[in-house]
Image (cartoon, rainbow, N blue to C red; front, side, top):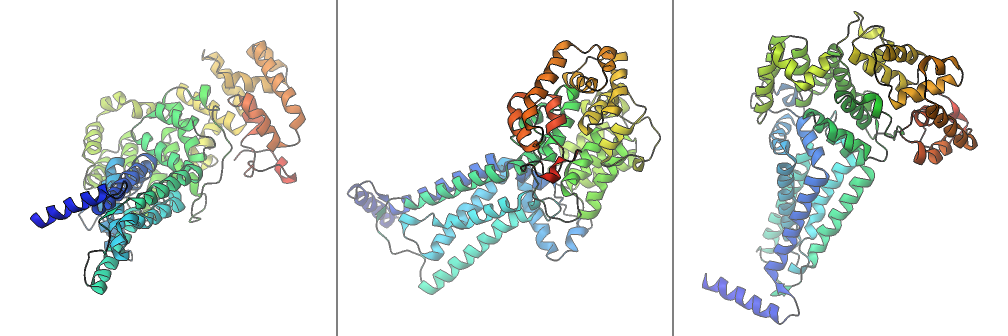
Length: 523
């Protein structure tokens, strides 16, 4: 003890004479502390929603029979263990704490393996940065239709490699201590600072929609609809998944016709592995079907994920909701029992056990009650409507509730099927619904070809003037849809004219127009 105290005193004395240097051990620990804090910030505040989403795309139980799908795979027992570790990502801060600790320990072991001097310790953070870079490269594929536990197994694998390398280094050198100066400046701290800055920049530049998609799905699980609307509207170019949840949130809060065209429908390609085709649609169609009132279609599409990818919490929870809405109480009990085997899901199980076989409680639950108002009244098969079901049903239905009238009108506007929209607009007027801006603008567009529509609906003159102003401004770019979008977006985004003439026309709409670009349509 006396020897150690004497050594520290000597290091401090040497540091005072060394022009701002600090004791070697403190310099090294400073680099690791900075690296830990920065990686914690990255995994918590930047990529935390992806970690939470990965945990919800997983399922873990100590009961081997429930984990058969996982255990039957190559490396099944490793994945089982990985899914146990993944439980730490139930919350972003706990998952970040785990991965930041793994990152700091990996860096420490890597530095020891390389026997780096104190002034450059922290260079070992390159290894955990590679793991984080792999997560960014995989995007949503890190959990979607793939083994979600890899998000923790890859960093843990690098930790194990660093530990083995450090052990080998010790055996070869005969000792663990480094030949080093008594004092040093923590230059190595610059390594994690630079690496995390690059990771944050790459995440925001290349994976903004990956993070946004994960965030809106996490928010949807908590029914935080206003937050979803705010997040998606702040995005520059959301993919289809955030756009779908934006519409769901608007419908849940009674703002669908008023706000559905307030975002950009200029979909960039989602980077998803080509496994079954139509990958991005499968990310949001199960929820879109459910929240459109198509409970059976919602149940089927959620079940498809469970059949193809094994039990996963997110889809099992949706299947519970579908079973309760269909009054299939024993089926709901079955899924609640399965979910109950997964640690930390007691709150969900308790809530929906109380709702199961309790119609009054379902009516008082805002989320389920809103879905019930949209339940179909037509006795037709899902295959009778075009796909995806939630869109085809709303465009093609002939009978429904007042709530369905709103979603049906919005679907017709989104599909640019104004002929199907017209009778819905007439019913909206007959029932005394207020005329949303998008409705009036759509009718004004139709009145350009049929002046009787203007008289039929008493379209205000200012709406007609808006349409004419838009067309005048659009005229110079009418042959080039790319330039049309580019030049009219600033003044007209949020209007139905901009959506109808400029957006959601063809898969390659984000590129400059070519001869093949001039086909009309909706994707």
